[in-house]
Image (cartoon, rainbow, N blue to C red):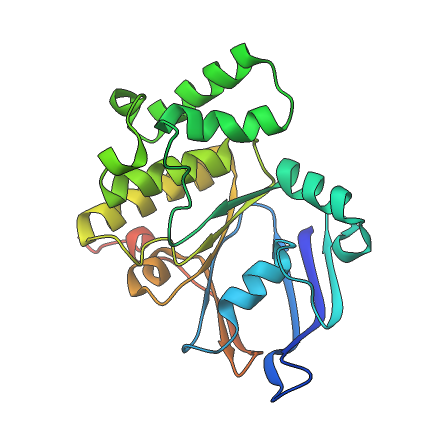
Length: 237
């Protein structure tokens, strides 16, 4: 059953100047438990599509349904609340709050939901342990490596137990070892917790682990391929 339904999405920027057609009629269905990479050349519409799915950017035309909810029929406050409870975001630039510790950055999402402080603390510690950073609880972002910051960002995205996680170029600023560790962790969460991950990426290392690869060209779906990730392919004896 599709958790996310994207219907004939079009997005045009600069209407009054030189129009830029970022998306040109995208149709897409994402089911629960997918580990999907959205790929394509620069300017193909990957990030725009991710932002539209996440309700961060409103389409010029078309509909996005999440759990049968018409995202863009919601009022602004309703949309903010919907994102807060159902969608986790992981950004290329991490977007951690500099003055907060790793634990506080994760707890912040839960506090916004109005959760009791004890629950915020417990959930934050649980997630830091899950991403292997239980020894970095009181470290601020500037005291963490890029890979560590991105793992905190993933933990924050998972704090509210969202239906799915949108990750926009999450490995772009990471070295090979950090990328491998981050992707292995996400795959484990996908397999064990059934968390749906949708990536916008140029990174072949992400594509190699994806179970579905959607290619955008000129704002349209050019191909949509189900595949076996390289790390799951069997080896001959």
